[in-house]
Length: 387
Image 1 (cartoon, rainbow, N blue to C red):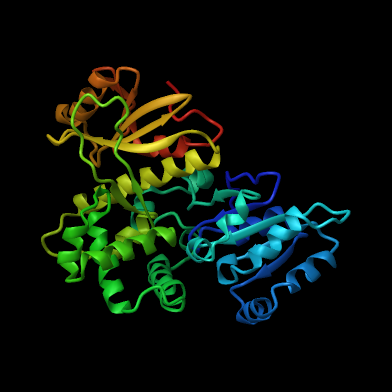
Image 2 (cartoon, rainbow, N blue to C red):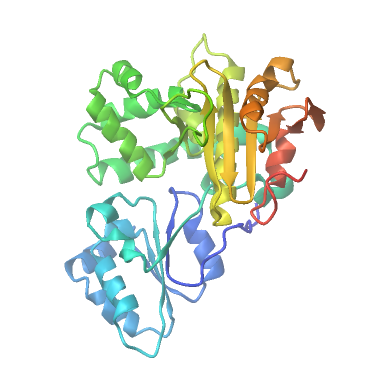
């Protein structure tokens, strides 16, 4: 596959670029800043060199002709942020430097007390591919099975590549960094957590299934979020007229990662697993759409204590959408129940049902769209729903 143009746009000043391994941060930087000075801290020799003498960075930067400085995987040398802060804030030179600091985790940066340069650099995120970035190469069935990570999409052996990807994270990000004491317990946890994908997070249930303490599971969940491997979606409670649940929903950041970690047995139905994968795929697209336009939009879900639910609420200054995702080629009246209930409480919302069929329909004032068309049409510079 030829190089894919990403929707992500760089801010004009210095910025952090976070994203899980394999999302294409380095590739994007090479495309957009080919003449920048780049220090890759996946190289152990560079880590040793700059960890032992952080001031070397200042000497290196001031000797360069380039004003764009890329510090790749900066979390491996968090002490360099003090030097970067000094260069941005106090260094008097005839150059104005732009620092781009990439990372697959902010955990060590926060623990180092750096506060991400005290607001001197903005924070941005790079996500897996969006369907519209792939254009005609987007294949929904393949995306649900193998996900949208560039490192997987571009691989001729995606199943083997995904196995290697999971192993890489366990070895390099978790074990090497000493984030957990027992890698076996953590491995069991990430597989068990896959059963919570697209579901309400119940820490006690996961702890019981893993035979691990609740406190340890809470720490493991924190590690997953810090490594950007998972995210949670909070409940929508603005002007709530009904009693809603309190817990968030849990998602792995990529449908392929979920599909690989989700243990499948004789009693599992393919439609159930692919349904969770589809909901996760929509979730990651909504996150990308919100982040890439750097807007006020936020993603929520809605569920009453009686069990009435809407998968996603997208809420911002310029729009309010209620989105339900169904892994079915046909629309049944009961599929519209959650959206109708939500719109009774929030008539300002635009209700949308996404399904696996091929027709664009309107039922009970609810727009029903083929999920493939919806995903393929999502672009940050366009409205979420073109009504």
